[in-house]
Amino acid sequence: MEAVVLICFVTYTVLLFVVMWLSSRRSAGNDAFFRGQRRSPWPVVAYGMIGASLSGVTFLSVPGGVYYGQFTYMPLVFGYVLGYAVIALVLLPLYYRLNVTSIYSYLDQRFGGRSEKTGALFFIISRLMGSALRMYLVVFVLYEFVFRGWGIPFWTIAVVFIAIILLYTFRGGVKTVVWTDMLQTTFLLLAAVATVVAILSELDISLAQLLRRSADAGYTRVFETDPTASKYYWKQILSGMFITITMTGLDQDMMQKNLTCKNLRDAQKNVMTSSGLFIIVNLLFLCLGAALIAYAQTTGFDLPVDAKGNVMGDKIFPSVAFHLSTFTAVVFIIGMVAAGYSSADGTLTALTTTLCYDFLGFERKADSHRAVRTRRWVHVGFAMLYLLVIVAFRPFHTQSLIDTLFDVAGFTYGPLLGLYTFGLFTKWQVRDRWVPLVAVLSPILAFVLKKYMPVWTGYHFGFEILLVNGLLTFLGLMAIRVNKKS
Image (cartoon, rainbow, N blue to C red; front, side, top):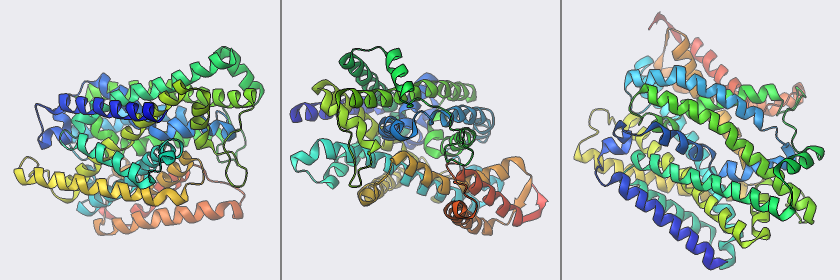
């Protein structure tokens, strides 16, 4: 088994470097790194965005989350579709009209330089944390189920992954990422499909029979109807919409890929196509979760538990995959490796872009020889930070990581939501020097509300804390507005 795992890892990595060479052999300057020379075919971007958005969190936490949360993740996905419509109709036309490389340049034009840097800094914090948590999950699972038995330390696996990602994005940047995302999406989906098929074959049932059995056991419930519950379906739909608007539409990583399309129309087709595919893909992963649970219940397989006896959702998929057969173990490894790479490659490129354009003024000097050298050092620096977050988070991994991920996003993306909403839907100017203070105070107040609202009223905030955070930022901007309008 160990030899097979190593061969799969090396083969997939070599394949990525082949894609990197093919995509960047004719251009390696900053225009290719930051903008992909605006030549990316929109179907390639749309398909690749699936893997970039799903990553290791969906690969493990969505199937694992079925054990406790059934299919109540789906209303959040329905909200994603609404969010993508807003991106296609509101944000993409804005970005293409302004011809931006970093989307936070809009905040400079609308409010001023400090607002731009505030938005860019919150993105850096948000994406560095969020993407590193996705990558952490991949490294954690591969370490627990493969490399730990070889006596290899956890941090060594993290270093290897980050080094590989740094190497294949170092030259081509977003131009390479657009094409490697397509490859990674393919292997993520193949791993999920192959595992479902293997389980159905092992249990000798059809997919329809599996779903009926899961429904009888209560695992396919889609809508949580208790308004006080954190996963109440209307809250999920609304939260999904705004999570997409913020974590995609206001996120340099995701939008940088969209902005490599040839024109606005292609970018809009890309986004709307992706939104439809997300429904199908998330249903696939929820069905995978139902299949994993059905396999455990039918065969008597003991699901992984923590020290308190609670089932660990993030470990259900790998536990069953490694127990079922060598084939399912291999496809799981391939899927996890793909998820690991897709979690970080675009993020490193986007973080580099944001720092270079919003803090170092690359808009004026992006093609100079010195700028290329600076970009490379920034890229390496973010890779080191990325590694630090992955290693530091390990002692704190106690719950389903998808919940942790959205908890972090609710506090860090909220100020971005408030800034863009105020900028797009009002004509007021603000005192630019006070914007950083508003952006810091808003998530602090939101955290207090999330912590104490159950005590005060019995209401539990879920992902909709993002909306509260954005509203607090909006109100703070109203408080520091000036009389003149833009």
